[in-house]
Length: 101
Image 1 (spheres, rainbow, N blue to C red):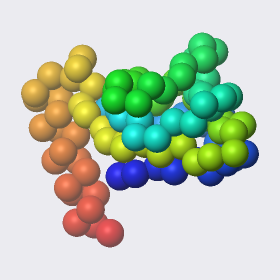
Image 2: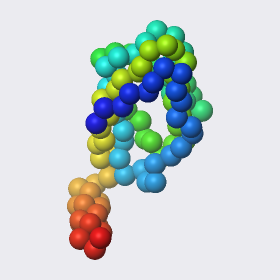
Image 3: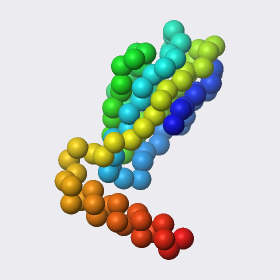
């Protein structure tokens, strides 16, 4: 999906519920100035065309202290430390939970 962080906007510190995945940010539009993310206490900045991959189970927050929107393509990939059997188990668990709703 696409994520636009408007001029002057911020996303408060938060975490994902699990560390089953890694989140990938592909920057499409990054204004000049103070637009960044703090991840596990370290500041990361986006560069157009360079993917930023991170475990969003760590505390992270973003801000855009510029006059323009920041736009990213976001998607998730399985955490590389999960084995095929673990991925299959998670997929089965989520499918079962979906059927019960």
